[in-house]
Image (cartoon, rainbow, N blue to C red; front, top):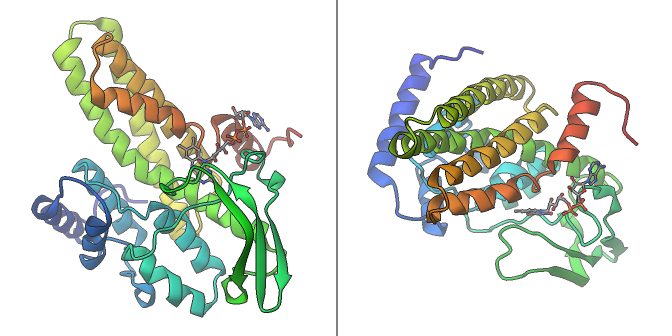
Amino acid sequence: MNLRDSPDEEAFRARVRAWLAENLPAEGGREWSRKLFDAGYAGLTWPVDYGGLGAPYSHQAIALEEFARAEAPNHMNVIALGMAGPTIMAHGTEEQKRRYLPKMLSAEEIWCQGFSEPDAGSDLSAVRTRIEPTDGGFLVNGQKVWSSLAHDADEIFFTDVEVPGENLLGEIGGGWQVAMTTLLHERGTLGFALTGTLDALVNKLITLTKERAADDPIIRDRVAQEWIELQALKLTNYRSLTTLMQTGIPGPEGSGSKLHWSEQNQRLTKLAMEILGGEDDGYWRYQQLRSRGNTIEAGTSEILRNIIAERVLGLPRSR
Ligand SMILES: Cc1cc2nc3c(=O)[nH]c(=O)nc-3n(C[C@H](O)[C@H](O)[C@H](O)COP(=O)(O)OP(=O)(O)OC[C@H]3O[C@@H](n4cnc5c(N)ncnc54)[C@H](O)[C@@H]3O)c2cc1C
């Protein structure tokens, strides 16, 4: 892939930057998400028929970089845009695509991901939620936990929930493949999006170092190392983007980006706290605490190392 912007990409970057300068809100939410949709920045690569712009993935990457640079709030439907939408695009019927995709982009319908259960996290094959066919539909029974964005619930219980037959995604018995599509997108595209945030964080760390620890040779060394790690991650992401542009599906290497990103994020925020020396700075403290969750969600670091060993490096299965 060419790492410099083409004239078209350069013009697109300038357009995004100018739009952000005019429209950046104080906080996110449904209204901001709707604004992103109206301006064409939600679902850039999604087909026009489903509310997207049909733009190339390189435009998506540029938009993510510019939004992160401006520290713009996310579209609130991150799970729909990054995971549920691509899964429906891969496995859904034409009717399902037209029904669900535009309302994801406009934030009219907010999606959550209900994979984890009390006894099934890393080992997704242990899920116990059961679906039985009924006349014209399905009956769902089970319990979910850890559902990000499900603000009104701390646990989700399904008891004899009726689901109409037309909501079936893919084939009966083919759910594993559908779930794997979601996870590939979660790790592949989420990792890419979050690198922009990391970029902004490294810049803040550099500023903090200049203010508080400019003369400390060990801190200077560690900050320089974080910058180097960030450059390596960016280049790896460009490689993943090339695969995505060629195949339309993120490869298992996305697990490497997510692992690198989340561990670096944790190390870097811890370093910032060390520089602050116990002073309670709300910003870095929040980033440090949130970074702990990043190494658990979307696959823990241990699980991602297993995936890299088995699926990227071709080593024998661990069990
Ligand atoms: C902030 C946050 C947001 C989340 N959002 C969602 C969401 O929206 N939807 C959703 O469905 N889930 C969500 N989750 C759940 C998340 O996917 C699980 O927490 C995660 O998969 C780990 O599962 P677990 O918590 O059951 O831990 P366990 O699977 O019980 O793991 C416990 C420990 O054992 C290790 N371990 C487990 N198996 C192996 C193995 N084979 N080899 C080596 N080590 C192993 C793990 O790495 C971990 O350190 C979220 C989690 C967090 C923290």
